[in-house]
Length: 152
Image (cartoon, rainbow, N blue to C red; front, top):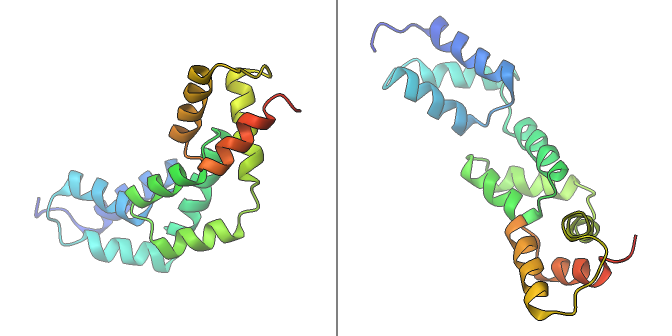
């Protein structure tokens, strides 16, 4: 699509950003899917970053908040941010600023999912641990959650 101009690419990018925050990598992919090998994509993305309209930091913060509301753990959140092209530096800064008690979040997720009754059955305990592991919690966080699930 060689007949695409800068304004068209910018308008498309702005429309995408108006709906929700996007990482630079996501935005680049979506624009490339729409406009192919257009030479206008890179300058538009650079301009959006310089103007503060696109920020991987802001995207990561919004993403983290949404995943915390869903009860996801740090490993899963980091993995998903990595898949979306967020740099390790941005992730490290984000998690250092974050004041989440991951142990308590794991306990709340387990309690919401399984209730307050503790199960002595090893098969049930394994099922619960796999669920929390899938959600992205560490082994220590999972043990804490399963041991303290019956406490409020």
